[in-house]
Image (cartoon, rainbow, N blue to C red; front, side, top):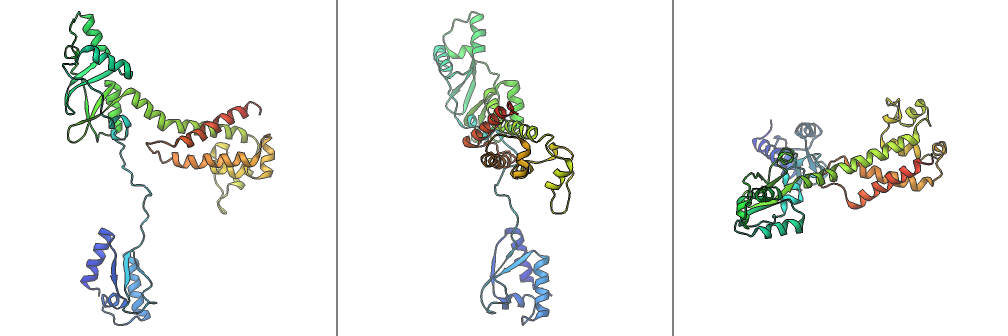
Length: 325
């Protein structure tokens, strides 16, 4: 029989991950046991294991009235707390209040700002929350073509403007931007916090995709270096996991770690006929492997400048090396 108090404690631990300080005496009293006998210890341990609990330190080795900690066993958690859905807010441009003009501004002011900043459009706003529309090179062109002789922004405004919430999923936003060419972004208080254009989406795509393309280029070069140099039987033996043989029939079945393990062996290196220094080559390959691990987490912020340069240098080096193979 187990006391209701212990049941309540266990429920709270499971729901909140809180820790409780008890004594061995109190722990055994929860089971209506008076002593720490071998038989009583069996039932206590059984209960702890069934509920994924642990006691620190061992309740059998400390003084019976010493405080010990009752807690949930350590849970495996992600190193990063990552939002499953990427949102438009992760883009730099969604976090930079846009340059805007007022309705009563002179047309030449809008045109000057657009030329100076290489913009295709400017929001027409009052304050940070009221959006009247947008002025673009297209609206200016239409106005002048139709002999509009006004020199004020308000006569060249288009009301065809889309405003997205700061929490809008990025994939949804991209679909809209591809159609509209740009959107304004607003926070929950309705203040405009950014403008996102096709150029911003292209830049973000490059940030995320470039490392994958460089990695593919590097791996393709490594595969060509290894191509035809080893028997299938040898590769299976090299890449065994304990006594378990992996299904390997082609160089493409190897992973990046396999490449390094194969190449780093001097007797394997000699087969490649590469007139370069082995240790430096392997060192840089291992650096690429570490970068690859980071890339596979698909961080929207991309890799660091240093990591990007390392990939570019290795890809360029292998491209040049290939010319002499």
